[in-house]
Length: 251
Image 1 (cartoon, helix red, strand yellow):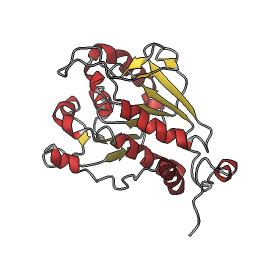
Image 2 (tube, rainbow, N blue to C red):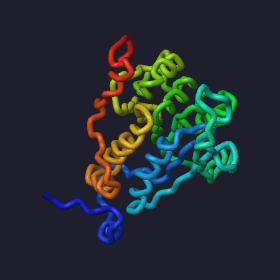
Image 3 (cartoon, one colour):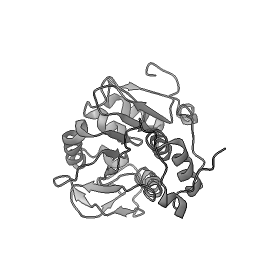
Image 4 (cartoon, rainbow, N blue to C red):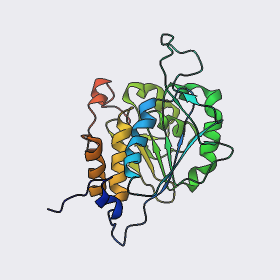
């Protein structure tokens, strides 16, 4: 059995994995949208995974927001939770009005997705670039953003199971998949959408994306560097049962 080179090693850096001639070149320009109240792991989990990948591929990342002011995971509007200052911030690199061209757009979720005023510029940007993207990846309630804009109509997607009853009505024409760690919809003629279940599932959908676009050996190498035991089965989803959404009209 051929050894898989460890990413980040001198061997891997000097000789990145070779893709079959028939395989299109994988994407190199990534973007992520952030807004007040984004969920931390839904951004930093996928980005940490891609960060390891970038040791062997020349990649670019744009963190986009309404302004260049640091964006907090704390939502700006009152919530049903106790008042807390426990949050993290991320510094945007670009604004929605001056974005770079990206091939892959990551759309996280979080309690901030419920703030219509703050989400308006996010949605405006997404709508302006969606059909030019090579791929879109939604994490958790990030699928609610696309669903509410009608961009998932008649397409398959999943979302966080604990917010299932809140998210799915936003996209009544979406073919919601109840039991899934992640779902890939590659309907011909439109931007492929990779959607994940809740929060931590964003890491697994990112690995699935890497495996498909960069190869299984590369995905395995990244997982080994991260010491992450990833889920390989897209249908693995015990939380659908936990939250009582494993059966119903939508599947």
